[in-house]
Length: 84
Image 1 (cartoon, helix red, strand yellow):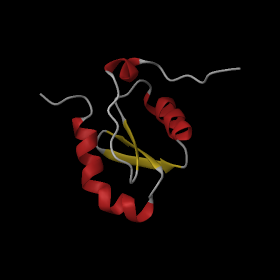
Image 2 (tube, rainbow, N blue to C red; image 1 turned 90 degrees about the vertical axis):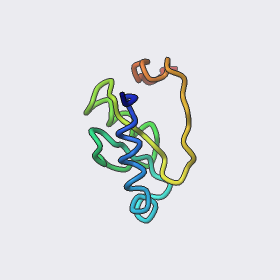
Image 3 (cartoon, helix red, strand yellow; image 1 turned 180 degrees about the vertical axis):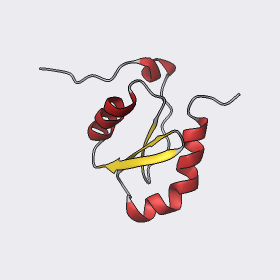
Image 4 (cartoon, rainbow, N blue to C red; image 1 turned 90 degrees about the horizontal axis):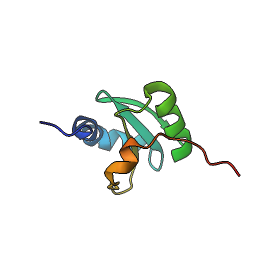
């Protein structure tokens, strides 16, 4: 059985060359194996992903950066902005 993000990661990998040509350094979202869009900051991409898809699953990656492995608790933590 696939892990929750395996299909999103595979979609990202299939699109990698095009993403690197057009969105290098941007944060991109994949959901249901589809490219959703590209944002300048992780905060902007994460805010849009949560607004559109709630808790997911969805993949956010920075184009051109090596993949980052997060602990399982991060996957389940709701996104929120810290206030000062």
